[in-house]
Image 1 (cartoon, rainbow, N blue to C red):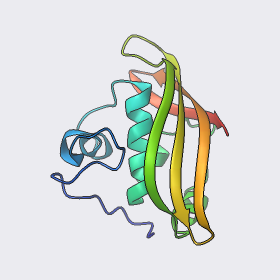
Image 2 (cartoon, rainbow, N blue to C red; image 1 turned 120 degrees about the vertical axis):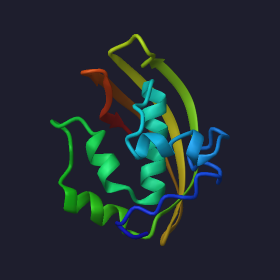
Image 3 (cartoon, one colour; image 1 turned 30 degrees about the horizontal axis):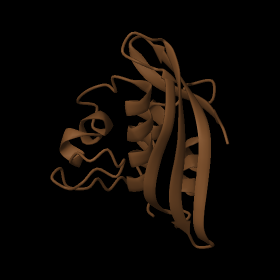
Length: 138
């Protein structure tokens, strides 16, 4: 996977698995045309950003106190991982009127070493009306 963002066409199915097209789902969030309304919506947009290699969206939506180095993140996106599926297992808080929330998910990928699964409980906070990824427990 390259570090350059390669978004899918708006009419194609969104990588986040919600069932909408990219143009109606995560595309506008990645392009900064609208904010993610919930912690889950932000988490789905971040999964999509990993799938398409959008380093800028990932950095922009990572809480500043936890944000990784740009080069380290770009290197991790260039490791040959192909993201296959996202399953959201549970959410707590993270709604339009909350300031914090969690999203439990399983992300399935294929790496040069074979099929992988990442099961994570991610924490999100909303600051100045914008949801940010804080950290996650794998």
